[in-house]
Length: 206
Image (cartoon, rainbow, N blue to C red; front, side, top):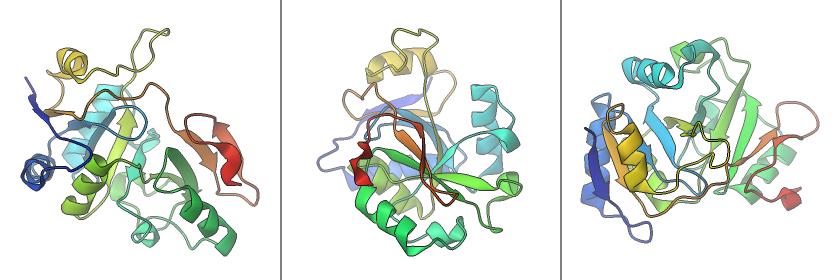
């Protein structure tokens, strides 16, 4: 059964964040809060952990639509081709926030994603997820945890999440009740922005 501990979003305890980072560095998989729904994540540099998440989600790693959760925009150039000023301005306005932006991938993407033309970037407005990524020193791969129940698509109660996912992951973080509305996905890889999914993030950023 997964570890389960509480971290407070307003002022995350650095020692608790350190424990999370240790689990990630060992190849662990975590369920953690974001500014939208709870996410399933692992260290982007750990191939075995990436493969585990793909198995849990029932997808091929190379064809997965996992997002890269970053601390800020400073390491964008590691994963994204050079973007123009207008795109950067949109990112600056919207992030951190409840958006996933699809951007053109660079040649230095991690091995399993080398053939990707685009990559989804997230910078959530949540201190727990931001501190985890900051202390880890590189992004985490992330995907939302969905229910089979179409009425309640996303579980919001961390204890129920532990009950359902506890045998599949190494840690469930209780960061309080999560949201049940996913991020807004906006494709910025072409000349004009395209909204692929309208979620929590307002479209008034344009």
